[in-house]
Amino acid sequence: MELIILGASFFGFLILGVPVAFAIGLSAICTIFYEGLPVAVIFQQMMSGMNIFSFLAIPFFVFSGELMLHGGVADKIVQLAKNLVGHIRGGLGMSNVVACTLFGGVSGSPVADVSAMGAVMIPMMKKEGFDTDYAVNVTTHASLVGALMPTSHNMIIYALAAGGKVSIGALIAAGLLPAIVLMACMLVAAYGVAVKRGYPAGKFPGWAEVFRSLAAALPGLLIVGIILTGIMSGVFTATESAAVAVTYTMLLTFFIYRTMTWSNFLHAAAKAVKTTGVVLLLIGVSTMFQYLMGLYEVADLAGNLMGKVSTQPWVIFLLINVILFVLGTFMDMAATILICTPIFLPIAMKAGMDPVQFGMLMLINCALGLNTPPVGTTQFVGCAIGGISVGAVMRTILPFYTALIAALMFVTYVPAFSLWLPRLLMGYKG
Image (cartoon, rainbow, N blue to C red; front, top):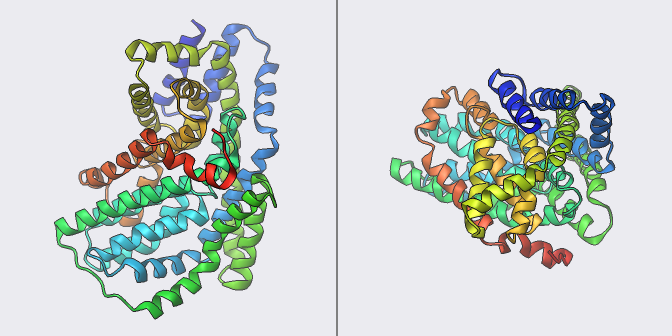
């Protein structure tokens, strides 16, 4: 009965339009009151969930991404991408994919990625004669790569939701190859649609211009290399790398590029504080939720139900993907990670999937949810920038969805995509 109250109240609050964080917390409170547990349990669980040293990485990575967003880094990355692939058919679409991937690497946030790249690329593509739905779809889907990059705070959230079963450093290394796979799939989709619609190719500016734009963008892109090198060499921990990212970003935007203004700095700081507050609230209330799910053995129940459907690992992985996709359509990325990881990670591990590989599966699924109504944050941002309705974008979304799902299947069923780099660079034994 307690489990029914927990689940029914949670989905009931969501249907009523209650924000996800409050729906999680209120459903946990209802269950605790029904169970007759002391009210102090609520506060104890929330505090224990948030009072973790590793969570310091979250505000630092968020702040670093906001500084990149408001510090003029995007323009230099866009120019580099245009010079590299702008001469291919549908050149601005191809440039958009590469630019989103590169900026996702320095911001670590799909929402920041679509905000920065969308503001630059969508109006530019419309001006050059590209259809708005194409411009928005390319931007919103390519921006999802940010969830897999070393600066992604969602990796930190997953590592802690996994209960210490996975190394943050291994996760950071693991995200690089899936990010490249996702970018490649998006390039194929963007090119295919460009050929079908007869979009023109741009002109190659010459290698001198390519190297000139590379030199301008390289200081910003170095943040990825600094984080990876520092962690792999043991110079600093994954948590400390976030503080290093902020320090480097401030030096870059204030003293190297000299594009950061005091007004933009304050705006970036305020946005980072707001985002951090939302994430920590989600972590606190989700800890209560996880406590109750552990108390009522939800993971075991879910595993038994899936076992009745099939004992084949590939079927179980497919079921997990479908469930995560459905949940991601109406839940925030962080909330999905925090709630679903304790349920599905033990099931996936029992079926033979490494926790690092499952982390990549989880992040791609959650990223896919960011671009799916009714909660699709990146899609809403992209449509707002492009001045087009979500319905109009959804009518032509299939090629880009197919590319995302193809990348997800590669990561799900080919472990090497997630595990090769952690084993090579860190000696990961998983």
